[in-house]
Image: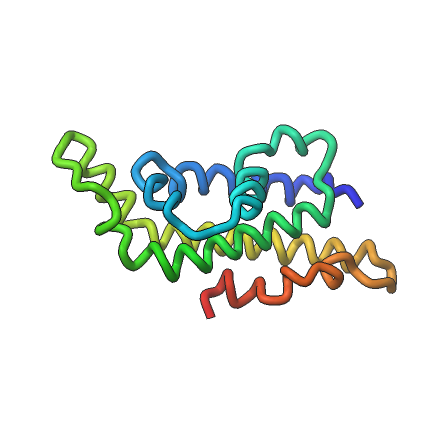
Length: 158
């Protein structure tokens, strides 16, 4: 099933924009690269946050989008646990003119990560609703993807 819903496309755009500007920016990216995530997870996150043009006109494959959401949820969970509490200590001190921008990125990182998690969760909820509606009494696609079982706790932080 291909998804071409304008609301979902806008959500994916917002997720990518927020990720690039507030999560994986030039100040925080070096610390992100130290996270212990599989290459496949990083590839899924990159597809979700960077490659919108590829899918904008052709549509998203539902199962691929679900896997990208699962990868983003793993990223959020691992980042909350392993990086957010120690981010300031993992980055080199910058006495230069960009120190204020670096400090802002570090100080706002946890709240920006939460906004990212909320956007991914909103995308997941919209996709599940669409999936249920198109299943027409059958089994929705999301029920056949085991990675989605723990999506809520990973994104909400439980």
